[in-house]
Amino acid sequence: MNLRGPKAKISRRLGIAVTQKVQKILDRRSFPPGQHGPTTRSPEPKSVYGKQLREKQRLRAQYNVSEKQLRGYFQKAVRSNQPTGDALVATLESRLDAVIYRAGFARSVFAARQYAAHGHFEVNGRRVSIPSMMLRPGDIVQLRQKSRECATFQDPRLEQQTVPEHLLVDRGEFKITVQRKATASEAPIVCNISMVVEFYSR
Image 1 (tube, one colour):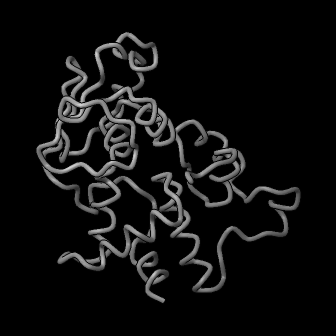
Image 2 (cartoon, rainbow, N blue to C red):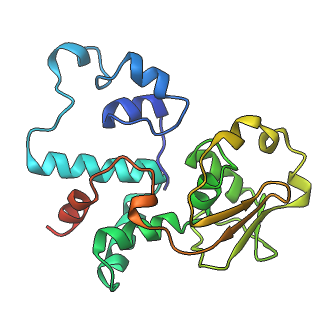
């Protein structure tokens, strides 16, 4: 199950903007939701466990993954030859919805998940509808011909997003080429990955 609920409320609870749209709301009301938020509740967890939990929830929100999925990705990262935190981020960045979002074909990871689930994209020439599909270096993601005239994908604001170096984007052909795996430093996320590793290593 993906993350559900009002994105502004989720952002205020976690202290980060999970979409570009809610950043303005977070600027005005950076305290946690609730009628007593600005006066009696501290946004900063006091215990080590609370801090680890918040970082884990931040990571979940920024990739729109369930607890079961994130735990599975962590277990996969532990078995890899890379540092666990780096491998975890690389795995999350390899998801189809994350690639669509990072390449600038969606305004948020939530929108990217919906576009992928509705079958707007092809991977290596085959239509897919699984947002969690793992992509490998050399894979080509392309917007389907029937979807290219959609106003959603013609939004000029999409071109303002910065594309990471591990992806090669051809906007004229609506094509994304995965050149290599992403590194942890390339992922534009707000999260202390080491705390996430500590949380799952308890």
